[in-house]
Amino acid sequence: MIITVQNPTLDLLYSSIYLSPDANYYYIRLAKNAGSYTSAVLGSSGWKQIEHTQLPVNFITNCKKIIPIREPIERYCSGIAEDLIQNNLLKDNKPLDLNNQDHIEFLFDTITFSVHSDRQFTILNGIDTSNCTFLDVKNDYSINLNKLVFSQNLGTITNVEKKNTTVRNNNKTFVVNKIKMLLLKSNYLNKIKTYFAEDIFWYNKCLGN
Image (cartoon, rainbow, N blue to C red; front, side, top):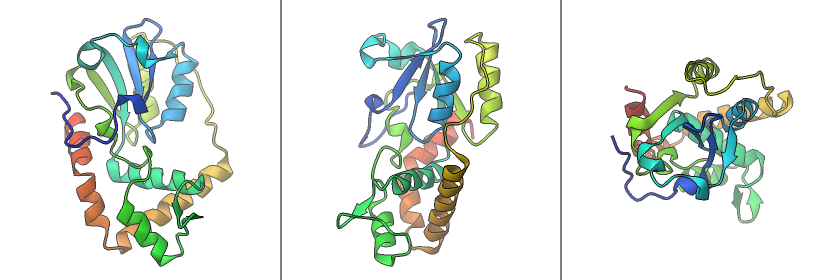
């Protein structure tokens, strides 16, 4: 199955790519899909980040790829929270305030502000899924990543501590939960689901749902 995206807004250049020690597998890092954790784990296991200019000509269609993916609405909420915490979301040159109704409407009406909150599969446009191993970030991800790496002899995974502090994680969780709550209470949920309809379809399709 070839991933085809209508009106793509992103491409593979928005993603970092890592090569396995045996040079037979590639890991494609998609924003908000356990990227920091996975990059640290694979980096400690001998994987190397490579430039796009180093990719083989047949990379999209023939090379074996590992791609973590995430339920689109869950990923959207996490991405918006990330940009909010970093003060990257502005209205009238001021950071968005989730206690301000005008700001809330602006947030959900705009939908996507960065690669963090845009459709993940747009980046994968043209890729042949028969050469991909998709790992669901929300379903035993660490266990499945370990099994995959060990079973394919792609390195030896070592324990890697997450870079984020507990305080930051708690703050992020609070913001994510508030965004979910506001989205459910708003009139925008159907609009958000429509915007991510293609992403939701490919997410389910690639996981065999």
